[in-house]
Length: 253
Image 1: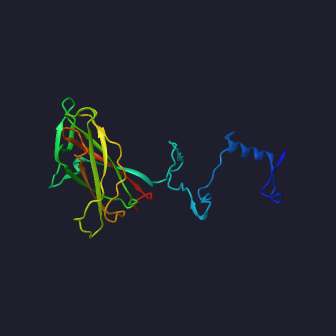
Image 2: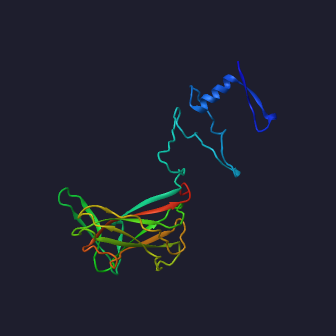
Image 3: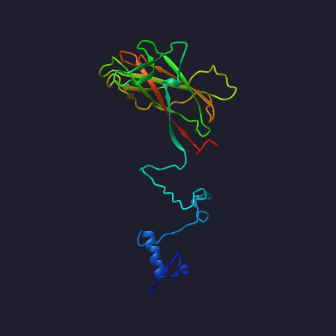
C-alpha cells in the first residue's frame, strides 16, 4: 500500500496517512466514488473569521424521522437566511379610505365580458385628490425608507398620456399626537397602455417617513394624484399600492 504525507504549515506538522483513506477523502471532496460524510449538527460550526465568538450551527432536531431536507439556491443573488431583507406588502383600494378635504371617490364596476369586478379609488383630472391607509409595522421592520408601485386602470385614456402619483407617510408611537404632518412625498409615474388594462408603475424613489419611525409603530400614508404633472385626460382608477420595505431580523419576536 502506498502511503502519502500531508504537510502542514511547517515540516514538523507533517502527517503520514494511508493511501486508501486519502483516496476516500479525495473522492468525497471531488464528487467521485460513493463516499458519504455524516456530520453531526452539534459538531460543526461556521465561524466569523474576524470574531470566533460569532458562530452558526445548523440544527436538525426538529425534523421527522428518516427525513432529508435539501437547501437549494435558485438565483445568482446573495441569500439572507430567515426573513432579513426586502419584503412587499400590497394594499388594495378596499383597505384605503378617502379624506374629507379633496378626497377621491371609491367605486366598484363590473367589466362587460367576464364580470370581473374592479374596486377602485377614482382620482379626477383637476383636483389633487387624496386617500389614506395605515400600516401597523412589524417588530422586525428596520424603520427605514419604503418605496411604492401603483396598480391602476382607466377608461378613455389615449396614447402617451401619463399619470403621476405621490405617496407620503408619518409614523406614530403610543401616545403620539395623531395630528402630525406627513413627510416628504415621492412620486411614481406610468403611461397609458389601453383602457381596462392593468397598469403597474415602476417603483418610486425612497420615501422617508416623518416622525421618529421605529419598529412596531403605526404608519399612516397619504396617496395623491399630482395633477400638475399628470396629463391623463380622465379619472385614474387606483386598484392598489405595493409597498416595499426592509427588515433587520428573521422574525418579529
